Length: 201
Image (cartoon, rainbow, N blue to C red; front, side):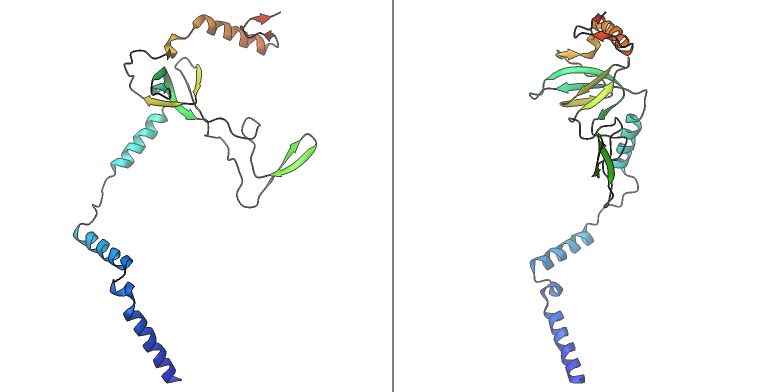
């Protein structure tokens, strides 16, 4: 039994000594050796302060200020600016939610379609519906008008001087806006409104 154990130890020792990973003769061994040498000869700088984290914190503070005025510029597929708009607060993505969309593990929720029940892992949205919206961003102007955009855009807290944006939210049709406000009030009162925003009697 002792001879077998010594033989086993001898075989194990031979395998370890002849292993290319120990001697560094394989490609992976050479790569590791070079990496160790480079780390020793030129060690990475130990940061005492991260400017990257500064930038992220500044962005979060800026974006979370409800009184911050920004400007958004919508871009066409050709890169032309097709509109500009002031933004109060921040621009928000349609994919942001106030509730989780699914449950973890094997948990399921009982939902209802009429009198029929079903099991699902999807949680109902805050507006009482399921599913996804088309991706877009939305924002409010300083006058609290709502806009959304589903294309490329530039966002900045400094206005840009542009020669000819095709649309400019500062050029709002105030007459049309006044009709829309009256139409909205009429709808809240249960009245009918046509597509010309005319209240029907």
